[in-house]
Length: 327
Image 1 (cartoon, rainbow, N blue to C red):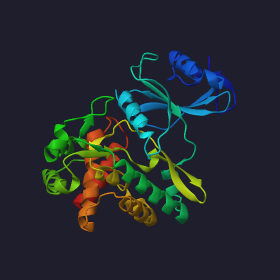
Image 2: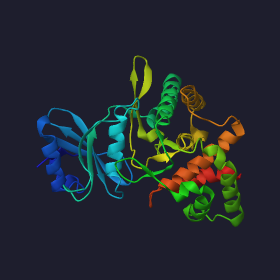
Image 3: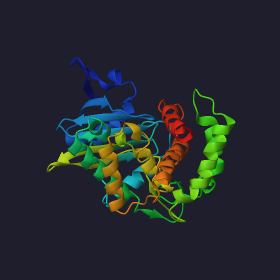
């Protein structure tokens, strides 16, 4: 039985302290980490939609365990991360995988734990040198993600990472009209507001597409999913996490996700992020006015495409963008 230590320093069995880590999952961990001396501690990590845990072994090594609760995209995320391991995009190495959920009834992924800080934690401290270097490296990383090209737009239907045709992306205004009508939580969207938003999407859709095919879209490229750390006087991206909602589309969806809350981001972060992105080959519309509208629309689209039911932040984020677009 794996042991964990609670906040008072008392050892308890993992099944008592962490009810969401079943016995069969603990046995799976022990089997896959046996060479590291076995598991000595398990503690929860932040995250929504799945269960995430920090696992520490007898020899002091750290791993991250993900137990998928609401999606069947474990195999897709694992295949994508494995492909990216040979690229310039930093992703954590996968140690063990149970994509079918044979061990614990739910799919499992065990990967190396990346030491560092979330970009969100560092950027909002507003230390100029750290903010600038993180922004630039995030932009460079996103441009690298956008260099992975697919034959068409769509969502990956399996671990072969072949995008399946998707009517939502093929007819974006129609899809967004339906989504907008249902997504505003706690607020009423008037018919005029709805029509204005859909008309904007219809007008700007051509600028949101770069080519007939698509490029890799992370779909949740936010500061909370980027692990950063210092190296030789500069801060760099150490790992990009949470690829389960990725699809083939336009990189502008990810740019929009980063800058969704640009009103509260340091100006130096925004400037260096866009500089790193464009200087590394990332695409942006030439018109500043078009850019700001497209980033908000792209953010709105990706929220609709990948939204998780019950996500407490969904309504807040969407309403934030909605008010900026309409007022």
